[in-house]
Amino acid sequence: MLCGRDGAFLEIRREYYQQTAATGRAWITAERDVAEQWRRARSPRDALDRMRQLARNRQTAPVALTGSVQYAHAPRGIGHWLHDTAPSWSRASAVFADVYEFAPGVWVHESAEVAPDARFVGPVWIGAGRTVEAGATVVGPAIMSDRPDRPLPPLSPVPWEIVRSPSWELPSILDENADLRRFVKRTFDICFSLLVLLVTLPLYPVIMLAIFIEDGRPFFFAHGRQTIGGRVFPCYKFRTMCRDAERMKQELVAANVADGPQFYIPNDPRLLKIGKILRKFQLDEFPQFYNVLVGHMSVVGPRPSPDKENQYCPAWREARLSVRPGITGLWQVLRTREPLTDFQEWIRYDLEYVKHQSLGRDLWIIFQTAKQILF
Image 1 (tube, rainbow, N blue to C red):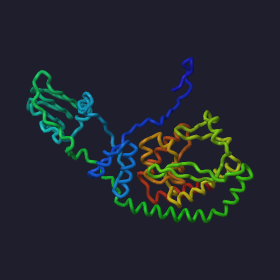
Image 2 (cartoon, rainbow, N blue to C red):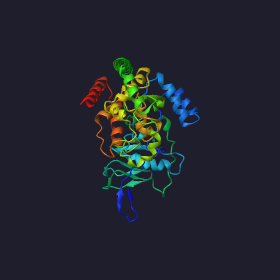
Image 3 (cartoon, rainbow, N blue to C red):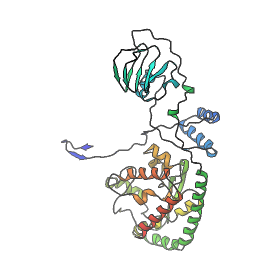
Image 4 (cartoon, rainbow, N blue to C red):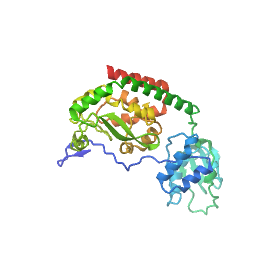
């Protein structure tokens, strides 16, 4: 929130930083050779590259889990983690051999004394040496820590490496039909892009001549974008802006009305006259069907973006780089263009598409795109 020198409210501005990461990445595997490759990695980037190479011929799937990370060797690290998470555990005996379940959700150290008629509203943990007297009521979530004025019994090491608990099992997320779905989608992309290129090829000389008459060469604009795994490819379009558009962009930053990494100005002065027509009917994107044909892109998918844009949201980046980017997509047909909401809609619709992609949805998006262009 920005205020003037007199304290008066001016505006709310959302700032994004490339180095900000709100999520952590972990690879979970039961295969020793995969874990060994991760251990040998020289850097996080090297580790990620190794995992992607190994995962090409294996079944892998992304999953988002809410949790916390604590360092066991940090001062009181395990203690803090135990205090935050232990009350919600369903099977503590899988980790601590000296703890038993006194009542549902009530875990007691074997050296503690608990009266038979004590009443608990779990979850509750009762530490070593503690006493819960007759008639007492303990309301959780709560932890009664080990009694400090009594010598504690020797504690057995916690076998973290062999912990097994049904409540910690990962959900079943592997898509058994993923290979077939990818084959069908790729086949559709090749057939559809060949058809569009054949039908639109007669328009190319006309469009190129119009660009040349207004602003000379080049006819095409190639920008580095990212596809599956973060690989960079040249994304081709007919040029719709003047040749010094990038220089002018720095002078027009204050007029940007889009949030996040996007840049959008109503009546952008950099646009050529022919560029406005090409964009209105999305004719400038015809060359991208060549990108589809060679495998850089898909007909439907997340909007192709450069690495700089993909850094603004780590979880969003991982999801959108798990599929090929598309010429059109769910965000393009459902976005509202409301001020300061476009980036949030971009993330929302990209994630929704990746999670629920199907040939039927792709055909619906193509139909909606055609409607927007024609009507």
